[in-house]
Length: 219
Image 1: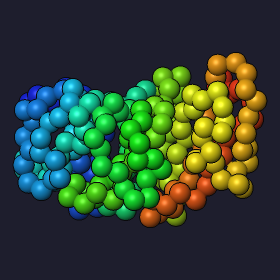
Image 2: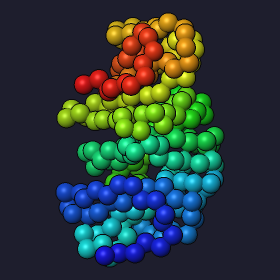
Image 3: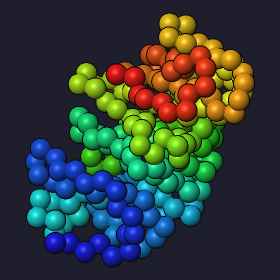
Image 4: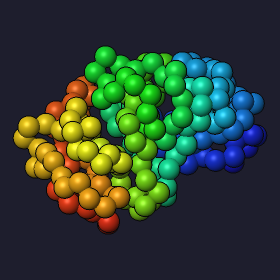
């Protein structure tokens, strides 16, 4: 066993093809061991995501990094919304940070309530970084918000808080199953988005044209 002092909330553990161990979670501590390669060795804001990769015996930290900005980053709900795929970690977390640098093909470069990201397994290469307007809702705690299929297509199931469907037009494609919805009530249909394996936006649709109280991720 290995003790990592100061890490309150680890969430994910993953073993690579070479039997290295990846640990991922969130922390409010800046005193974690930041050893080896990694893009961000400084703790910022009130909470950050944290990534550690260990050797197969769990005795040596091979790479490490904080992930986040000048506010908080939090994993929302029961589902951690973190995937490991093709030597990369891909995730979506809630955020209040306003200084995150986004990719050229980001869904949004404007600060929002959610942060979508991807790093290589050494957290040296940032594959993708994007804001999204709305954080996933606590009512989605049992619902998957991130899925990667066998072809590397990224499926995002994202919260919507807008009374006007036109406010989300940048995320809806003309071939979307539902491109508008009725304006009534207080709960609005979530948005289903697809990104290709280069993180380019290829599809977006509301999952319904009416209020959804218990949504299910499309297959």
